[in-house]
Image 1 (spheres, one colour):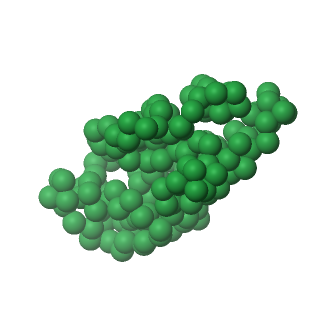
Image 2: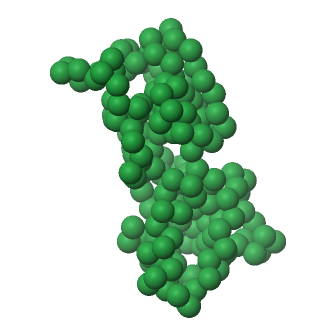
Image 3: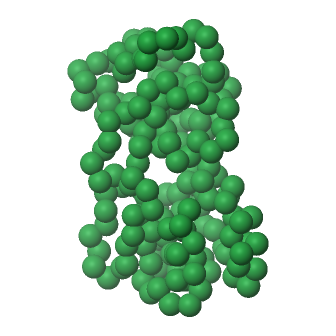
Amino acid sequence: MTLSVPPSFAAKWLVPRLPEFEARHPDIDLRVVAEESLADFKRDGIDIAIRQGRKPQDGRLNCALLSLVDLVAVARPEPALTGEDPLKLADLTQHTLIQDGHRHWDHMLRQEGLTATGRVLQFNQTALAMDAAVNGQGIALVPRMFLGSQPLEILWQAPRLGDQGFYVLWPSAQGRAKTVVDWLLRQ
């Protein structure tokens, strides 16, 4: 079974869960293809794909919501960033903001009429932005579902982005594909 997923989704969400899948389904060999580009199921030999964004409208594919995107601002726990009062978005703008390829910081700041007054560190992958936050390089805005056991503190919860989510896509839910899709949706 070939599963196409975004690289950061693979690193922060899927890989930590694979041992449980393998223990429950030793008869299914998974091949994980981590790529940002959309998969062509036939040409690329993809059985199942997971993509982040708005709900796909391609009627030729089955589609199920795995999780809505709940963004949280996270940083390595430090006394300077934590206090008794909850932080607001405006409080975060003076710190180094770590942005990934989805550019959520730009969107959130623009929506609130704010600008970053501190540095903005740019990465093309969410996993790299999270690693930079773990290393104390600033504040990353990432999907809550990626946190797992990361040593990061949630500083701020972003408003929900409509129907932005992680969606499971597949052309046919038969046999092993159905088993994998069902397992993904139970996580």
